Length: 307
Image (cartoon, rainbow, N blue to C red):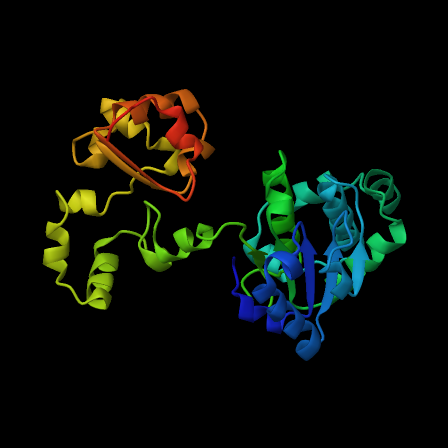
């Protein structure tokens, strides 16, 4: 999320697409409704189904499943045609918008209606309502990302926000309501391999700052690592863990040794590609611990019978 939930109180319009927070994110929905009730924010819901969230909308746009991109191109074309874009923001901060304006050329309201099933008048009403608002907030969730074209959905949504100058301001932004309990936690709290909490990175100054926050001596903290260089080096991503077990060339990322033990909380191992490599790596480890309420795929694919 580029903005926090409470910041939605500052929005003047909120598009919710690929998300149903009334059912799935009730806390977030309270903040959205406060934006509507206290700040007059217009809520636009784009969804193939009339959800509980849609019931709270000022405007509901029913589109065919998988036609989100056509809808967004139609909105962007209307923004271009009516010069509703933030010209100063585009000149100062955005590169290549002319290419996007070329891409959207064929997406007339009539063409968008043919693709999405949404009457053209509703498309024009949605674009007009959203472009007139300053700031406007875009919300999405798994209904967007879990498509085979999920990256294209999120790409164009973010571009629409840039065109309107809705990035980097209170009440705007691209705000993703996560679908799993610790996805946002991994991102913000620092469970990732390339940064300390709060996106501070891994530089010496960042470590010294957190040593102070954690009330530990920086030199003691540094001594927990094999070297200062390793302390400040980025680790492997989830999808590459197996290569740190199997490929000697990756030992340099792990203090000169391959990974020998794995503790897996949840089912992340089986959600990445090259399952055969994951099995090979699981079988080779000295120690594997799975922590899960149920036996998951990762525990099943390995043929080890101990440790």
